Image 1 (cartoon, helix red, strand yellow):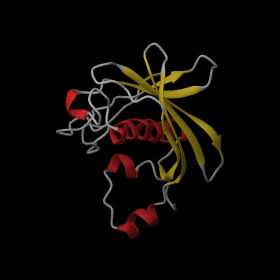
Image 2 (tube, rainbow, N blue to C red; image 1 turned 135 degrees about the vertical axis):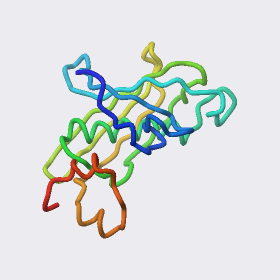
Image 3 (cartoon, helix red, strand yellow; image 1 turned 120 degrees about the horizontal axis):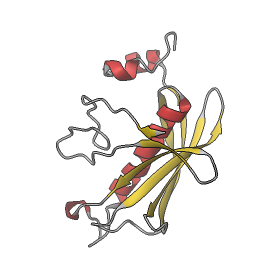
Image 4 (tube, rainbow, N blue to C red; image 1 turned 90 degrees about the vertical axis):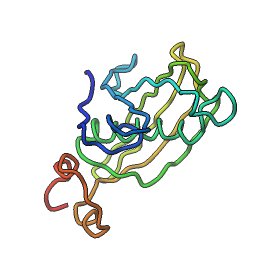
Amino acid sequence: MGELENPEENPCFGCGPRHPRGLHLRFESVQAEDGVPEVATRFTPQPDEIGWPTLFHHGLHFTVLYEASYWTALTLGGRLWVSTGPIRYDARRLPRVGVEHVARARVLERSASSLSIRATSATLAGKPCGELESNWTPARREAVERAGITLPAYLLSEIPDGE
């Protein structure tokens, strides 16, 4: 349990440590009250991240939940996974600007070829804000190469040879 390593060269808008405008999310491995391992991040929506006045923008809220899901797939899945898309996104109550919140994610189902993950967000007092369910499949080296994507070495090292 503890903070997850995130390379300085990570270019991601959501979690890249040095992205010039990004959310700079930092993640930690935690254990839920029911004993299930999760990945969590705390975030405080900023005044320039609004949709409706005083409310965090829907797309940025989705981004926080999606990032929590990605870090869960990587950390608890034990390798690099890619999303096959969201299953369901529900924003019951958007987070308020200037108020610290927490997003947590856990693996719901797992097989050799897929992960199902649920991410939730809430106030620190536990009032729910939203939920994202998503599916993930293992990253395949040939698919990355065929797409012409150049991945940083730290991500390539997470794709087993021959995949």
